[in-house]
Length: 202
Image (tube, rainbow, N blue to C red; front, side, top):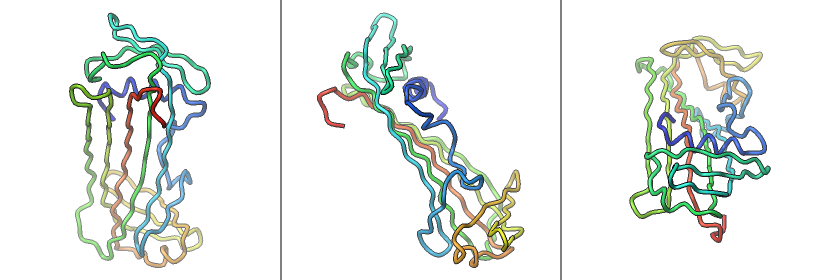
């Protein structure tokens, strides 16, 4: 998430009663559990949603005042990158949905080059539609398995820029891994923001 539309996303998220979006998914540090989806494959993910109501709209200054679920109020400048600003009304709901996920796949005796690639995807509302935006950031890494610790069920991975330890909670999954294998990891972080009429069910 790198574009200016995140100003609105992050400010709305700051109204949440708890820090839902405060720290990224980090299974290696014990922040989430990787669930096996097939032999040699696993996924960990987390989702959150907050809703804030539009309390005021200043068309001349292009600002919106939002009230969060805990009663916190914040006034935000809304840049031209947020399409269809003129459709925002007092009483509308600003809904922020957040998802991050990590998918891992074991490649037995893999021969791919260690690498890290990143890409961003942004979608915005078309003219005439309700204001909305979706932003996603994806990181893809290929890493080599360089060590195993059976006592802690930890796999040591060497990627293109650093070495990390990943604990595998499932003993059957850990038994599949050997030094010389490779792991492909794809981390995705997505934030969707939409402005919805107050009378629409959430």
